[in-house]
Image (cartoon, rainbow, N blue to C red; front, side, top):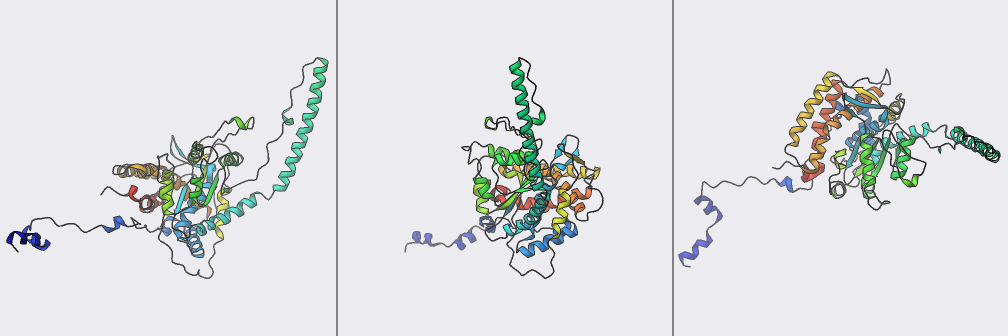
Length: 429
């Protein structure tokens, strides 16, 4: 073979030896191509929750075969719904937040999402049933009021006809002759309400409500199913996060107008990672994805629960949140002490720094972190109060409440959001 042809057989090693100054390639970051881009952070359960709540979360998760993360995050959402409009957090003048928390339990099928939700749904259902012990008495009272109003109206019509016959001015119909509004059960949670039904539930239950779904994918995909995709369903649920007034003013409602002074719902449910990506983290950014806390823990290996685990205590504790004294419609504002205010301001500045290197949906989510801090600090304060059942409810959010909240957000919620958002949550590097 001629010397000129031999040049084409030079090895890569020989080329490297011939160019010793050439930079070496860095090690391949193979985790960037993996399905799970970032590993899940550990849940600092014992440092976040009061001891009794932490024990209950662990016991419930063990009995359900689920990661404790699912039970803990679902508890924050449910507790926020039970507090509802009875208490709002007010760190300083001009800033008020309802304790509504939307939570997405992310995981593959059989990860334990639904069993974890059951740990909260069962006590909520019992509390709701107790709230309606007087249902039959209220129903018959309503029938009596309705019949009495009809008789009064009939008497008024008779008097009005006689007045017209005599050429006199007819009497004004008395207020107690008007038919009373339909009676409704007292509600805490719903699993699949239409927006029209959710509006009426909100009007009848001014404290607030919880939407609990086994699969959030069905809820998201079903939005605007009955209104040609006009977007009003999403507008309703976006409004429900902020506790703002809701007055739909539809022609079909006629005189039965609906007015909700503070529309407040907490939403919690499970969703599979691929459905999260294809339903919630796509399309135009209307703020829905930014209004959720995300938890996507590692799968829990099945194990038999230990004997003697007590998992029923939550109903008693949660019922105390439900019984918080309140005179509607205006929420009772809970102020922050100076230490909590200072910590919140430092967190706002830290979040602003995180926003500098972010974009898209994840940037929108980061923008909600100060609001999450305000809401969660109020919830943590009330979780600490309701487990012992003594003394008055919290009259302020303390620095300790805020410290617990910021530990949760910085060490758990932010890494979980990066994991859940996938590529949208990764730093540019």
